[in-house]
Amino acid sequence: MFRCKQVFMLALISLLILVPFRSSTAEAAIPSTPSQIQAYEDSYFYSYNGIESIGSSPLITYKQQSYLTIDDAASILGLSIDKSSGDIRFSGSPTLNTQQVVAGFLPKDPTKASDQFRINPAIGAQGAVVLEDDNPTPIFSKNQNQHLFPSSTQKIMTALLAIENGNLSDMVTVGPGAATVPFDSSKAGVLPGDRMTLEQLLYALMLPSGNDAAVAIAEHIAGSHQAFVKMMNVRARELGATRTHFENAHGYHHPRQVTTPADLALIAKEAAKHPIFKKVAGAPSYFASFNDRNGRQKSKMWRNTNALVRPDSTYFTSSVSAGKTGYTSASRHNLVSFASSNGHDYVVVLLRGERNQRYIDTRNLLHAAYSKRAQINRDDKTRMNVSPFNGRLFVNDRDMTEQVELFTRNGQEYVSIDFLSVVSPAISSVKASTNQQIKAALNGDLLSFDQVEPTIRNGRMLVPVRSFFERAGLHMHWDASTKTIEGRSADMVIRMQLDSRHASVNGQAVLLDVPATVESGRTLVPLRFISEVTGSQVDWGRGKTLFIY
Image (cartoon, rainbow, N blue to C red; front, side, top):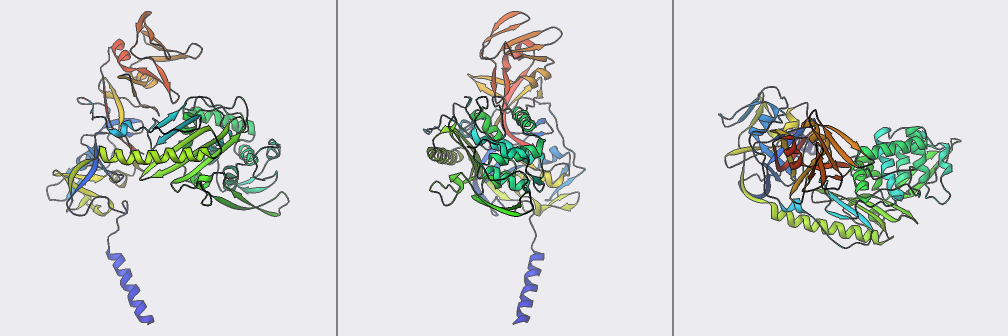
């Protein structure tokens, strides 16, 4: 019997050695036989180190995996390509080819249903925002820019700064400030002198919503509670949360401590980029063992205040992976939630709701989003015939066929976008945007925009002012007291006031089609007006974006 087991194990090991290993795409999305599939087909741009370039052929997306033509892959990586033998042979040293110059016009794909994705269920909360994936435009909003009190949802910022500036394995000695939080605060029960890891403190912060843990983290990261609050406000401005102001690290009510649904969504979205944040904020409970100031062991069991992530709750929602509650008598009941469904990620912010209704509102918003997304996915897809590629793929004579996905369509070979990171040591990852984005070019050069992309209002495009002014040779000045934007060159002065159609060029009054405005903390100005007064040639288009990191 033992001899038979040995023979079986040797045979199994031999089989595993002989079977090729597909490293980067564990499950092939494309069928292994000629098939008709429904997939997205989009014009695309690619972005690397803040420089945007335009792709030549359509990007195809199928089952959350994106593919580009091998000719585009060769062009992006600066490689030569030979297909004469029936195989695909790339050669050369991979060098990112970033070219902002646009030959011809930018692609103007028809507007897709996903670009107009909106849901509109009735909710009880006073303010709300729902974001999907990397789309900066909410799919649902209610009073998104109204100042409201964040209460403990601002602990998301506290956790973010702890993760960004600390080491989770750090041993932290809880400072004296933990004992000074207001007596009616929510507490985790950590005391001055307690010694625990920063990771344990994060659980103490996020699950029982410990204000004592918030101050302990603040003192550990910044040296003092006050210094940490300054860090919070600086980070908020960096993220574009310009309508947010913090007075403490935990959210206990202060009349000057405010945020907006839109701002809080930006902060939450940034925190969600860190897997440890979602791991902590999504734990139903956590057992912590640590030492007190005298070296004696003590333990705590912390239970998550968020009913959406607790399996024992009637409000448990399996698609919700994490979240943070908040409450003060002034803020009422707040809730931030993180959810995923069918390859799409969602951030839901509710402010000034009611205790249980906030859970019902969140579930209704998510169910509406899931249903509408499924419908849109059906409407936006194109039927296409594809076949598996039967040859091999070589890069400098190295066979890399098993590391990427390949298929053919209309005689053109496509390769999965992870091919770029597999081949080039300068690329760590490649991600395709979920939705098409609006792009603009000035005098034939693609413009790159920081965080906020162009938008269309009343049929007119508005673009982030700083990027456009700099490229047009204008020096920008902002007067906060009058909310006036000024662009100045040697022979021109342009002045615009936020939310006003009245502007001037060299002192001459001009009436704008649409006014300058602020979105996500960035100032947007009408593209057509700026281009006409500066004599610049402007084009706009739309497409998905490949973000190359």
